[in-house]
Image (tube, rainbow, N blue to C red; front, side):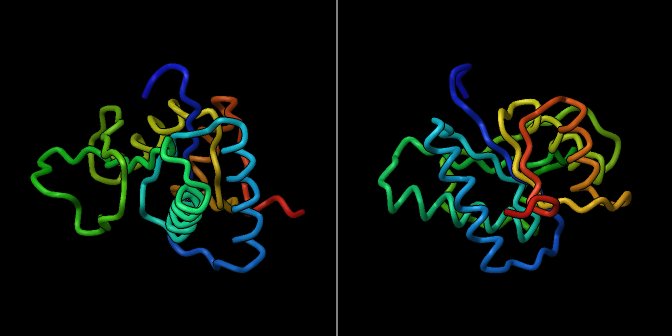
Amino acid sequence: MSETEKVCSCFGHFDVEITDELKRRTENEIMKAIQDSFRVFLFGGRSDFDDLVYDIVTEIKTREQISEIKRVFCFPLYKQLRKPPYWFQRKEYEALECPTKDFDWWYTSIYYRNCAMIDQSDLVLFYAEPRENSGAYKTYKYAVKKHKDIINFAERKE
């Protein structure tokens, strides 16, 4: 990604109830981001919320014919990675990346991948409830600490 590209990433709990209201609110915020020149969207692909954001970005990219939108799947680094992890879903990503820091076992590789994604991001979309044992919530706290522009759909109601 270039220095001038605006980057948005998304994170959420593994299981999220996808309501019509959540879809509407998420689409509104993604449209605002696109109108504000965001063109790179980073995905980890491990949650219902990731899937929702991916689907909305894809639909807007197609509907509005914005070819510059780049959907990037970000793998966590597995020390012996010879093939994509079992949970990887092949979709129409424009790029695959492995933005990660050093780690000591598989779960920390996901957290450090998330931190590396946040480090690159100008905007972070979350569906993260305050659950201390949640990877999404730990990632949310990291984004807050890094003073990122955050929208947390689990907290914010219109």
